Image (cartoon, rainbow, N blue to C red; front, top):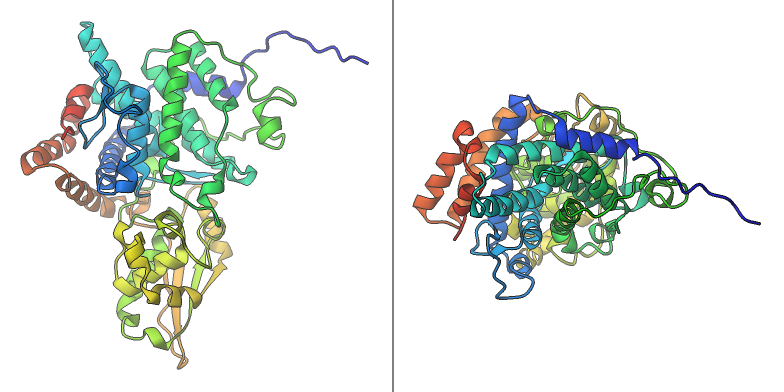
Length: 480
């Protein structure tokens, strides 16, 4: 028995069309989005510069083949590397994400929209240098900020209602999709070429969340975003050369993304693509820690004075949290590496209680050997607060609440410290910006001499001058 199937080419899936038209044609009018994008740019680059202090990160950077020279190659901030744009995208994406310190978006799916900056900067820098060599004008930094806003929006709107982690896929799938769309548009691709590139991004192989979760948590979670941006840029360049796409990549029965990888469900998209995500993005200001635990660490630090002289009197520590934190960072048993530790709410809370602060160094092996950490972890009980879980998904709140209370053997206890919104949330944005600038200043000073640091700071604090700066000039400021 044979089944006759039509081989007529279908029209492109509407999701592909909507994303492509937004990437190619939508005009961003929100000044708040552009101002926030500037802060996002400098914060993300600052995170990357801080990561350059860690050999486990820097061993992955540089050309794929040592000694490779690339005319008009893209720069990698904080280094002397000048690479082909695909390799540069990996480098920039890897260093920016390494310390788990860049911005965050939390919804049905989680992620870090500034991960897309790897592809955007590499493409814009390379194309600008090539344009100048050909007598054409370069991109300016407003083009970069526009692409950032759109990448944030594509990744974030897709994440609002659609949980990729529930089917075992890692959130960097959305980095690949968003970067593919905006970079193809940035490089002059037509709507049809963006659709072609997007279709290849969706039907690509996608990483599993294996490397983010117990018992396999490891450093791939720190370079997965770089991998996604590099792949996105490759798919974009292929589409611009005329490589074909697959119009029903999502909806084809049996063989499309929905049936193969999304349990037969189609995407739910309830907001238009505008500038909502950049306006509401969460800056990770205070601690290099998985974002669902940020308010827990803040609460632990506030409790530090009350417990610092009573370690052996503690009976139990109650952590009240939300469902997403329980799914991602609630861990017992041994923690095997820094990537394991910065995704453990008990470890982060213990550091806050013991030291009264938390830095990236606290995840390293020498700090982790402190016996007090595991002693406190064994006394911790995590429990879901239904209200926290509800407000986490509420569109007008999007809280990331945690509360901590310490109970002592004599029957006394500390007060219950509850924090709903972390520093860096839109509701605490004014409080966050001075701290963000201080964080950026410290990251620059860790890498550059004072004159170079001041030149970067002066430029990055002037919205108008920054937006009109040619991309290649901006990138040259970060060469060491």
